[in-house]
Image (cartoon, rainbow, N blue to C red; front, side, top):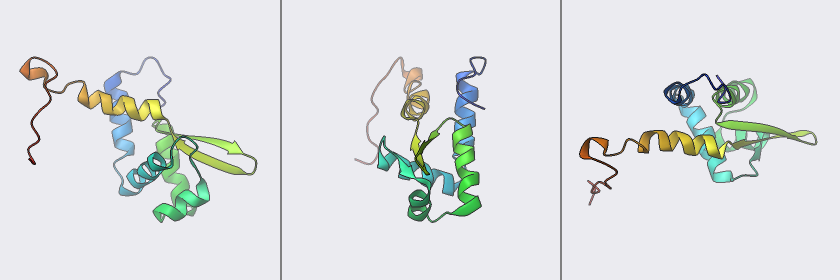
Length: 114
């Protein structure tokens, strides 16, 4: 499911994205692309960095692209992958928007690790 479909609810979009991240390999791919920044990485380097190559990497990237978390673009003979920053940020916001709603608003909770 792609994010551009206006009939999809925010909950459906979030569920699709989280389902795509339900694999250690896909989560590793996304984390590596976050670290790479807006220019992204060529598919070959991405695969080497996360230890997933070939058709398995292609499969995982297809899932992340379909969920709207990763974008691919051609650069000459290379295909570069990067995160869709707005989509990843929206996914984070989806969870944090509800923070402390039962307490009457956005309260920054105490860090339980302190």
